[in-house]
Image 1: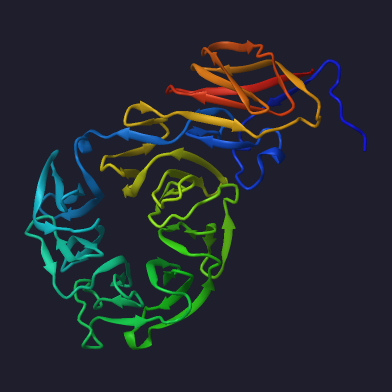
Image 2: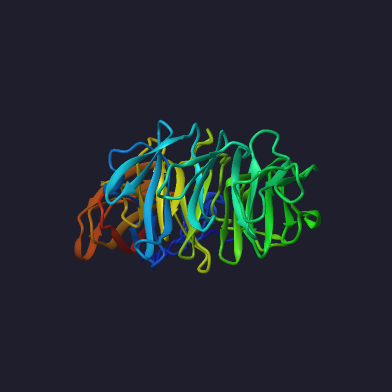
Length: 453
C-alpha cells in the first residue's frame, strides 16, 4: 500500500460553504470535508455561518412566570369584527388574558398542570376550550364567566373532528373518548346519541395523542399508530391499526405539518403520510426526549428535544425545513413550544417566555455559536503544520486549532476584507473550531493551508 505524502508546496482545504451542516451519525475521523461534527446556535442554510435561532424578548410577557400560552380569536357581534387576545397560564395555575394591553385574571380558572387550548363555536358564539391532564375542562366565550365541565375526562390531547371533540386521557390511557355531536362539552357516555369512547388494547401501548388528518382521527400511541374513522353515527365508528414503531414515540413531538405528520421517537424523527412512516433528519442524533414539544409554522417543524443530555430535559431547539430538508440546532432549555397564529413562542424551563426567531440571542444575551470540524489527518499520517488560515467575518470570533488533541485559540477581529493569520501549530490530526459570542455573526470562506513537518 502506497503511503500518502503531502505535496511540497502544501495543500489548501477550503469550506466554500457550510450547508453540509453537522452529521452526528459517523465517527469524527471519517467526516467529509466541509461536514461538521457539531454546529450549534449557528444557521448555515444560506452557506455562511450566521446567527441561529434564539428567543427574543417579548415585552408583553416580560416578568411573567409562564407554563403555557395561546391566542383566542372570536367574532364580536357588537363590533362587527373578529378580535383576538393572548392568554397564558402562570406558575400558580391561574389564567390571564390580554384586555387591550392590560393583563386580567380569568376568575375561577386554576390548573394544576400546563393546559392546552382549542377554539370552537359553541351555541353560536366562539369559545375557547381549555384542558389539562389533571383538571376538568373549562370553557370561556370571552365575555361572561368561564364554565367548568364536570363530566369531562382528564384530557392529555384533543382535536375537533366533524363537530366532535376526540381526546386521549390521563390514567390507563387505553381509550379514545369523544364528545356529543355539535357539543364538545357534552361527554355523557350513557346514550348512543351523545358521547362515548373506543378502547384500543394491543401491543402498541398507551394512547398518547390524537391528530385530525386526511379526514381521519389518527391515534399516536407508545409504539405505533391507529386510525379512527369517525364521520358517521357513532355505531359506525371503527379503528384500524396501521404502524408499529421501532422505538417509543414521544407525544409532544407529534405534529401535523401540512400534508404530513412529523413525530419524534426514541430512534429519531419520522414523517408519516397516513399509511407509513419514513425516517427523516438522520444527521441529528436524538436522546430520550419524554418532554419533547413541537409546533409547525411556515413550512418548518420546530422541536424542543434532547440531543446532548441524558436526564430527559429538553436542551436543543431543532428547526427543520421540510421542503428544503435543512435544519438548524440551537442550545436552548425549552419546556414548551406554543404558536400564536403564525408566530412560534417558547416557554423556557425557568418560566420565561419569548418569540423564537433568528436573533442568535437568549433574551438579549448573545448565544455562544460554535462550528466544529471533525478530526482529520487529511489523507496523510505524517506530521503537518497549519501554516495559514484565511476567512471573512463580520463580527469578532475565536478560531481554535487543535492538533493531536492540543488546542490553541486565535482571536480574529470582524470587519471588511479577508482575515489572515498563521497558527504555526503541528500534529498528525487536526480539528478547526469557529466560535462567535456576538450578535450579527457572518463567517464565510474558511480556508486552511497545510504544509509538511
